[in-house]
Image 1: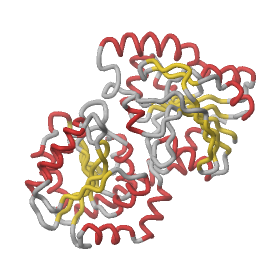
Image 2 (image 1 turned 90 degrees about the vertical axis):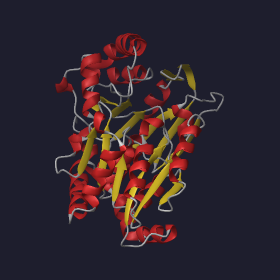
Image 3 (image 1 turned 90 degrees about the horizontal axis):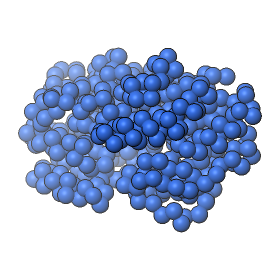
Image 4 (image 1 turned 180 degrees about the vertical axis):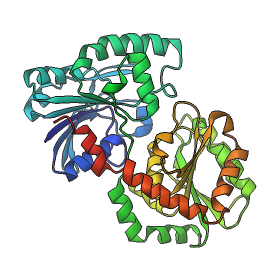
Amino acid sequence: MKILMLCELYIENLEYQENLLVKYYRKHGHEVTVITSTYENVFDYYNNIHDNSKPKRIYYDHGAKIIKLPFKFNLLGKIKKYTDITDIVEDFKPDLLYIHDIMPNMFEMLKYKKKNPHVKMIMDYHCDYSNSANNWLSLSILHKIIRKRLYMDPIRKHISKFYPIVPGSTKFLNEVYQIPEKEMEVLPLGADIDRVKEIKASGKRKEIRERLGITDENIVIFSGGKFTPAKKIDLLLQAFNEINDPNVHLIIVGDADQYNKEYKEILLTLSQNNPNIHYVGWLDNGGVYEHLSAADLAVFPASQSIVWQQAIASGLALIVGDTGEQSIQYLNEFNAITELKKDEINSENIKKSIEEIIYKKDELENRKALAAKTASKYLDWDHLINKTLSHF
């Protein structure tokens, strides 16, 4: 099958949904082309720092053709349109048009679909009330008028299925865009199960632990991501310092962008007297998985990211915080995850949750086994891609 994907960001050394779809579509023999932006840095993307003078660029990743295009316009980082993609669509002749979120260029895809009725069009969706529509202007103007009336409403009937990535996104699409739930199916942010298996067989767990001065008998907690106050990593550091167990270590992966240097200093200050806290910096997706393999338990106090799924896939027990609309209970059929609600997210409850797992007999090993079971059922892209191909 020939699959054309339209998205805002594709950086080959990251592991976002787009990257994994490309890898596993290609693994199963599909031909893939991705149309995306010229961003080369994830921090620039999130801060809307973009050099639109960068020319069109084409390269290949996992055998898929990646076409990076400049913007025709970029409205405050909220509505971004590439230069015309009609020729790309017509030349590639895709069977499946995969749109990642609402994007103006999808209408050029629609023209092709109307001329080729056998072609299917699908859309995944990442917004929910925790990351979007946080004020009247965003909800009433950006979403309900610009994105809904100008973009979503004209194309909606041509989309075979909407794939919100979490139940909160299902609620958002239903309430803000009036998409019936029967037209939606949650498509979890899966993980690279193949890479997990490779790293487990590689001996990286032992290598990383030895490099950090951690023994095989020690218990290792993993955390990290972009250092922002929304992540509440400071609460984890406070809890970890209170546990004060020489046999328990904490690995923190990630870094701050230019706007969050002060928060990073807060984290470093909380860590400065504890030799069992190890900062390893910003890593590519391979490095993240390698350090996950060295851990036993992952703790993310707030602000969901793909690393949550990567941790489960790596067989780690998981403690997370739901600050609203980001519950991970849809992945908790087997009770591998401890989830703290918004009013429960504090250092005391994080400490208690960690201790209940690492000090209760057999609890840690049981949780790790349940995490592996969860990953097999919910996070394996060998199976997840079949959801997106089920319309043929």
